[in-house]
Picture 1 (tube, rainbow, N blue to C red):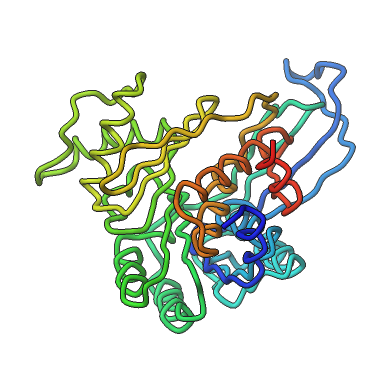
Picture 2 (picture 1 turned 90 degrees about the vertical axis):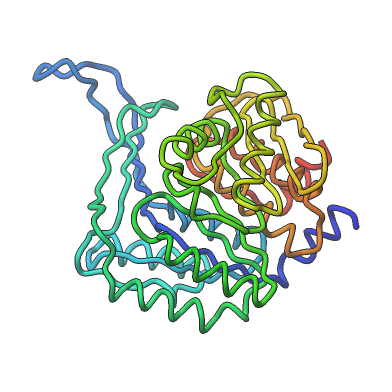
Length: 337
């Protein structure tokens, strides 16, 4: 199957994205002087805008590529939550799986940009123990609608939606109904992700996961002595050990300027070089990777084809400033290059 054939199938697929939805706010302007009040730059604001972030950016990426998307998560009872929900609806993303949490605000990240440089980020969040009522509503929604989906993405930003109970529940349903399930992981949660179709850590996340597993695991653990992965041999060993430990179908490690490394059961690792280009901003690259990789798998691509497509999408995103969702035309053009 050609890449064009795979992309044509995107619009017939439905993906459920479960995870921590975030509102991204951008304030852009120019700096030409230092404040007389304190040694800080004075930004002359020229514009500001909002975009879906976190798991909501994964949903945005999928929708931009033509897929139908069910967003599952939680927002606070506040202006930011309503704004985020409105932005998702405006992008034609199904928000019936987003539930109101009266115990915590909507997670909001404000990035202040001077020219092409981020000078400060302001976070609004309150990560606390899960709201049991909200979590029950999320589980019920997943159970009711999982049969309508071709794939499930767990977008774990460590803000409370993705718990061991939820992952176990979703994996059980996905395996029973033969659904593809992928995870954009959080380091401290790696032990949750057993038997999923794939996880997509970057190199630093893989290194930290190895360190974390070796410290916290009481059962037989990873057969690897290093947690700094500087050589191809060390990356291969780490990938194979994580595959074995988590009993995964596949593992896709993103390596920045070195591209990606794909691991599959009973196969040699497969390296995908990156395209040489100028990098402006890596924000959102991981969201693009898991979106395209998962969507391609649901469209019938094999894992190598899917990883190559994800690599091409990431190359487009890092060449843009700020969070960016790749279009079908941009993806096909990047693949050709």
